[in-house]
Length: 212
Image 1: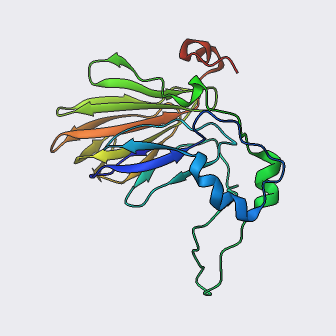
Image 2: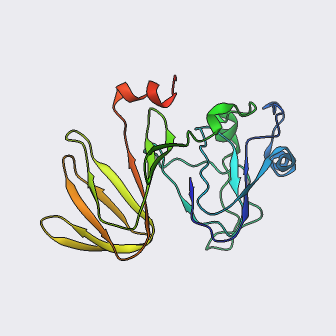
Image 3: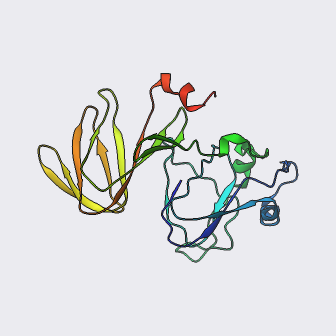
């Protein structure tokens, strides 16, 4: 998750080092169980790596850029009394949550593997499923997707022109898919920040510290 927020907000993830038990964990106790969640203060451009099966929630006032393994499955354990467009409470998935959620305390894998790769470029998160890199620049740069895999480029800050055989304008909030082997120049009108996401080659898993 890449934070685009302009004001500090909060996010809750996992628990405060206590192991939550699945036994007797019913619908009404998910509301009570909020007290076990660790509150993490967030500031603009923070990154949090949330492993699959992790029970988590996001506070109000946060805009997220979320990269994940391809999936459209989200289970809702508790909904803070929200209602849908029909005025009725939205569906909860307590049974499914209890079947798949990991209630163990967090480990080091919840920390982003943040490190510099080169001037203006750093690794935000890397695992076997995806890699997120950040590139910041004020002058022309070149971006090229590998010959055998595509890349997703998302504009977090700035605006300018993407130049290849043609030209396209870019601005904050836009996402571009670069086909395998595609190369382009990015010419900023102002300071720009890009997030580049891709599936890493298998050989790169271990260099990122992923042993799973």
